[in-house]
Image (tube, rainbow, N blue to C red; front, top):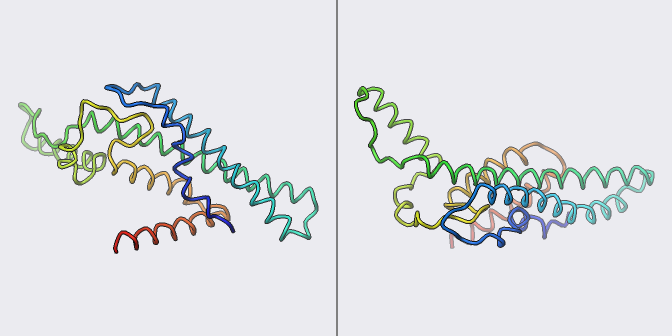
Length: 205
């Protein structure tokens, strides 16, 4: 399978319209919705673009015994699966980024205030829950990241507010979309795993 052009563009297909959004003091909810729709359309379009030629060649090359109509059905099925999966991943990725962007602004990062006259046990429990949720949303190094991020400048719609957000959204979205076994998903996972391994080796040097 020729997947040399597949993996580097998985996220590009989800973010190919983000250059239209400029940095401003506030990012409206409509900008985030537009980024999600843009990722959905871009992912589906790119999935069709790269899968139809590949499925066409592979089906007619190795499916000699299949009737012509059956070949067309196989090509359509593979192209539709690739397109739907890529569009779903791009859409879910953008939704998770937008959700974590909102939650990171709403959740205080271990400021330890606001307990008032609450009981000791309930105050400790609330602090513990806040700490766990804050660590999940903002990452384990949220305190140091808070000093490096300028709160007066909002992140453009469709982009992660922190690098950790991109990692978490990609991991969750990848597990949900690409975790189901199929021939298309299996080919993509094999190629992505090899690219990740090569990248880790280069970083370790």
